Length: 294
Image (cartoon, rainbow, N blue to C red; front, side, top):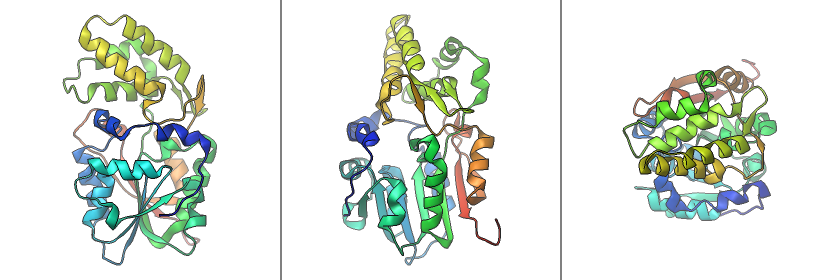
């Protein structure tokens, strides 16, 4: 294991109990369809291939473990890397190497190490808006010449801008899957209170709205769901706690693909079909641009 002090903005990540992972569901946790898409994106790899995993997502670690090759896991928290294995079906600490680091420093840790594949689920949304390009450039640096970056991303569903927040709740509360409903509503509320042009999430406004919705819930089911959404919006997804506005990696589809295009070529895009709004959480397979194709 390699250790490094990481940015204090990630102290809240340490406060996310691994037990809360059971509360997470798509879109914040990979679905079975997402897992299948990741596996298809990986394709055929050899035992000589080197894989880097960004974050502790157990589903991603299970996928990599099946490949029977060298795997390094890089996270901001050693405890998360260890404790999230509770939810893994096959990944094991004995078959992984761990690095505690801010991802913006990975090129310093991994000098002369180049990866055939880098995997990370929703990792871009954990990067500050002003550091998006720096992050992607660092990923490009540590990829091998033919390496690929496979990541599920989120882009804003701009159609929610045409609805009020109340209308979004009314359209969403009857989602039949009780395991998904709070997570799906959280994603929609995040989109509604986001400004992709200025990369701002209006967290304070979202919290105030969900507090009001919780107080006005018409039955116990609504109350329970809205309180879960309120907890997520307050910071239960591991996002750094800030008051008021949060400037974060918030993109429309066009913004996202323009951002990727500065560093990578898009090889493939896969979309799961087993949860609502999955089209806004696609998996991109990206190949680094070279001097010949820039």
